[in-house]
Length: 599
Image (cartoon, rainbow, N blue to C red; front, side, top):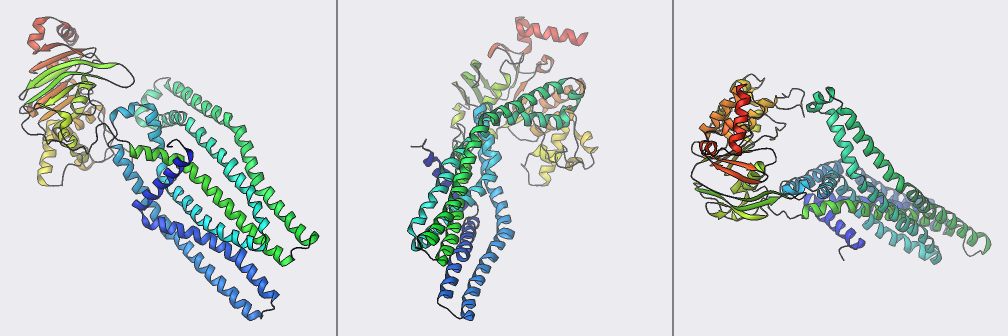
């Protein structure tokens, strides 16, 4: 049943009306009234008024009385037009913003709950991009289409009654636009949707190249290498693939469009004229006045039917897009951000990985049988070559992912039993690939967790001092109020890689959390700045549990416990001195790095 096309379309319509009603009831109501006014205007002038005038003329009604009726209709249609103008110039622009804001807030809320693993699923990500990029456009379009269908259906019943009263056989001519719109145009819209869906992945490639060419962070590499040729090849292949997809659909689309035009307009209009002429001139079963009325009524009803069918096809097409939005909003994350559960209790006495294994969707296991237990405020270092699974282990600890096997325990309780947001507040984090946002230095450090109090300012200054960034911030034009990046303003400041890492470190220092996680926090720093940062991390973490990831083994010497990882497993563990005495892989790597530093 759920795969049925009609069911899917009706579900999308229900979703559009329900969502529109939730965001802006005024828009849903006035949109319907606007469309109803459109059809009322058409029916009053083309059907009712003309027939009324001809009837009065045949009865030889006084001209003054006839004009009184005419002006009554004109005044009523003027009031309808006044409402339509008010809708177009005031209500629609205002509620467009409400719909845009409302649907995006729903999408933002859901995007913040999507499991991290979903971003590595290309199929899910394609549907996600379609949902996000089209929702704010397709929602108002669908509401308009649904209103057109509802109002048009009522108008068609009224017009059909007028036609039937004059000539019951004339209704048969409405079969042609029904075939043209519901059959041929329906197939055409379905093909266009599938064509656009096939082109999404190629469009993403082309968009990626466009972004890369225009972003300053890639400018140096582009100018100092031949990578532009590679990007251009990617772009050309994507464009060529899009053209091939369009080419596969073009002939069929052209035929369907021609059939739609021929059945909707040619057969209908010419057929109606021939039929009316026959009744008046040959069979003599209709007077010219009746022919005039039926022609205008037929023409009005035809356009009503065409608009109705067009609205149906538009709703079907919009529904295919909104279906993606609906599926995305109905997505139930495996790790919901608003999940209820236990509140973590302080202090954090133990953290334990109990035979934990994990693998991303696209590959095999990244971590295999990780087992260790930490007690008290220890400092723990993870080291090893790239791809050993060090950062993945921290993502599991932060519950950005859940293990495939085993458990992670904090204070003896499986972390899946904790309330997610409360649990994550236990951690202050700084990642090598952390992001700087288009906002002030202050906001990039406090990350919205402040109320502008004196205590917040003291926390900010303390974090900057620990990150050794006070001098650099003071040199900025507005100090901590300086806007970072030039995303929104040419006055924004673009920091160096090392300066960015200091801001990211300050972000962690600003959190009063019992557990700190620093993942390669110094890769862009010079040796002196790196040494100072390590010292400050140790100072900050004296009464905290510290997890520290680094390739540079000189930075992990003071850790209470060092885990040397290889191929997703913990190969060696102990203090720096113990591992050196074991003379294993850790000791060999340390000696190589120490030799390089000496030379």
